[in-house]
Image 1 (cartoon, rainbow, N blue to C red):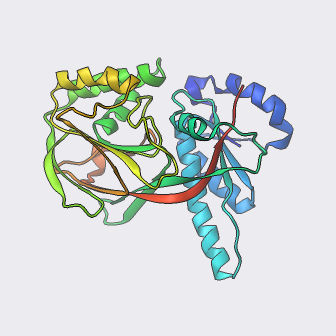
Image 2 (image 1 turned 45 degrees about the vertical axis):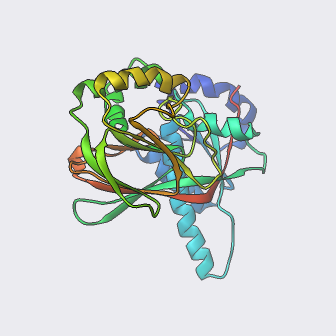
Length: 313
């Protein structure tokens, strides 16, 4: 179990105490010490042969553990194939003790909860964000719940500056700050699957595997195992227009008849922007404008992870 002591605005230890009272003697607990550490710990756990790897924290911990697990499992599977062996990737268990817990929400809604030691887990889809770095090297990152480019990336940047809120209030205030600082929408070129690319003023592009992003219900009908992203593209809405959209996005999901809201279900997205992009993956910053990346691709990888969520209380 990879545990983030800072999850839930440092309330994680209290939330986890009762859980560990039941499972502590059967759990190898490894706390994180810095950003990126959870991915390293997950990769090490795969190499050590653990059959279940749990992320105890919020969506940031979930993201890092899943990314590290998937990368190490890919490498282990490749080595096993070279040696004529076979083996399944570890089960990914989520123990939700963070603030938003968006991924846990979708897992529980679709599959319910399961004990930590139960062998059952559900094949779920994974997303991969890829880009070319400024030095010309290819880069990528897995995500399991959501990915957003443009406004949601800037919202994530703003949320890092707010230390006294969590959940929807945190991201709501961050959204207000990001909107206040935003300029007019730029002309992005976006291509879905094999469709012709389209160019137009764009505030943001979202790809969701789960239902929520930052606590906002952006994909009410999303399923974690249907082989498709639920996509959302926000066009040239004014600041006032965006402000009017926010309450509905938190409670009901995006409107289906808004002239600046484009919804769909796709397997891949290519985004090209005239300016450097801000992009988050599962609420964690993947790219900031200083990275000088103007083009990203998102691909859905069906059934790449076996996952479950465990009840804390």
